[in-house]
Length: 404
Image (cartoon, rainbow, N blue to C red; front, side, top):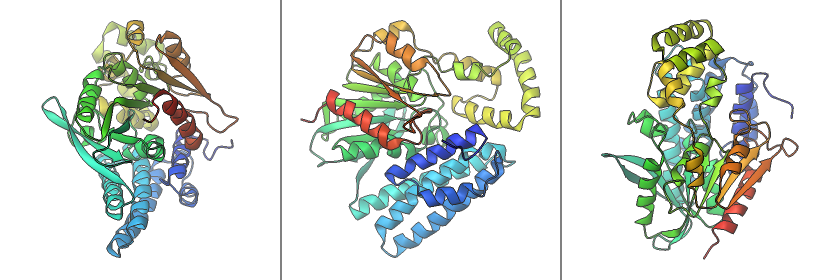
């Protein structure tokens, strides 16, 4: 398809926003009008234009809510949340170090208004939950498709490294509700509120995250404990397989895409001399050399700030070293017993070839599903094809975890 931008990052982000149209998290005209005012590769304009569109919608939504037009208000808040999230993606390229957090908070406020107004209008049944986790709690949302005391199939949506909470709606929750599932999503370490408000960074041993989530669900009257599925998206394609190698109460799991070694996408961008410094453990020299690159390239500086934040580090050496811990062993993949679906999108730009690698290593019941450019469904997490993606993934889930 013809790109909107020559800049690959801007193009991918635009496809992601357009993918939200299928579940009303974006409107085509709003998206096209917004990007029409953004010059290629100009991060400041990206932030300004998406913020302006989101602000306008949030103001309209507030007026709708005041007037009692709850469903229109909820719909506008959902789109505003999505657009604020897009604005925050490039905030690190601006001179304002507080802008990312400010835009993230606007995104979360708009999302919560969508949730509350949808409940108030009767459009959705949603409950905020607190998941006990190592002396604190992780925030989550449970969406019900049935009565509060009716056990139903339940999908856990496991976000990736930088997915917004709106992404859980677009790529999992809305489809689950349409199929009669309950659904839940949560902010794990390094994700959304757990990172921004609680300061909890990523961790590789995700079984210590997913198990508390499952513990919370199995204690609920509205969850069929034998029919809990989990979907991991983007870096969740590493976390979910890692977790279900240890957590065996999951009836079926999805990795979209399969991620065997998270670090490869980062390390591939390093010159060989820097990789040698990393291998040698020369932290001071590695950070000094990276410091020159960060001074010379705004794009590199922005990317590194974005990528390092959820790892809870400020040293490039510490970041690349930590990323190497996020790798699945053959023994771990062989320990997975539940059925698994692995997506394999054409032109996967972050972890190419790893879906097939994971599929070959799995010994559980397994399926590999391709998504192609010819059907407009290529690229990381099938950004512009949420309809096709949802149909295939939930057809598989319905077969593996049928309704009672």
